Length: 186
Image (cartoon, rainbow, N blue to C red; front, side, top):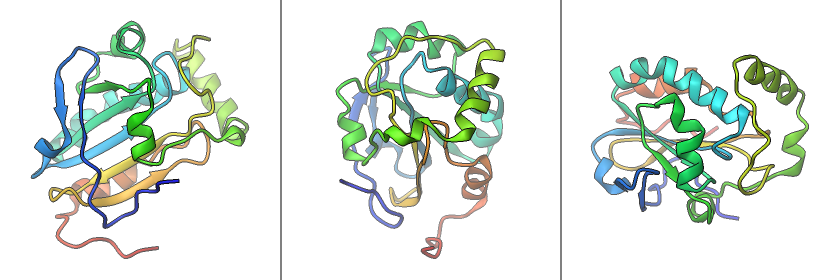
């Protein structure tokens, strides 16, 4: 399995957003990038996370962080579900899981059964995110990658459950860091 680690050059890619707009990761050089991998477009848990990011987006944008989100759904399902939140960042469909494979993001069956999944599911449903429609593996585990302006992986975060994303405090720290030195390996 391909694991992306801090300090290595992030694999570049060219893709299209769900609207057909081109995305070239190499074009983001010189900027701080948050590359996030989610499950499917109708996933209540992913929609809750996107909602939280949308609410805090101005803070990340002010810190100079460009977010790119990848979902395992086809473009039409992204338009039908998660795009209704009008997130101010690109949403890339990857139903063939090519980017997931490149970045070492994969399903983990036990990731469905962490106690926090029930709590987050309840919160998602209470916020109005509920759908049983899914695209691709149901146990896809989220992952997040913070890329410095040189295209180096500042931090890679592979979740342990279907609700385990990089903490916002880590993203804030990344935004505040000048990214001149890589953090010490832990």
